[in-house]
Figure 1 (cartoon, rainbow, N blue to C red):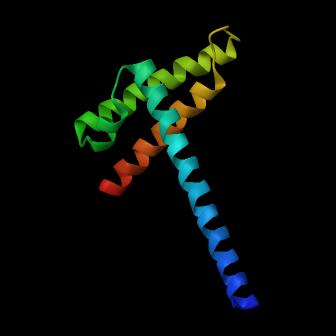
Figure 2 (cartoon, helix red, strand yellow):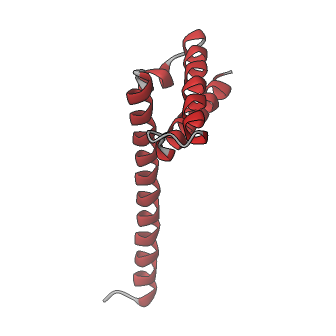
Length: 105
């Protein structure tokens, strides 16, 4: 027979695993959004950019900044093709690329 304490521990373990799973899925979803936005808009392979070093990464950061600025200007002008989700994904991709650059130095 299983004691009440054992059941409570199992339940806490399952809840912890569920929380970890949800966090992992959210992270994967965010990466997919960033990857799609970067590849569709810039024709650059986001996974390759994450692996790149030195001048290639700096050029990619500059290029992403230009695309973000273009997207921002579309938003300010209330252009029909402006997409807030795309803008956010590009910004997150840029921040991720910058953070990897900072960690590498």
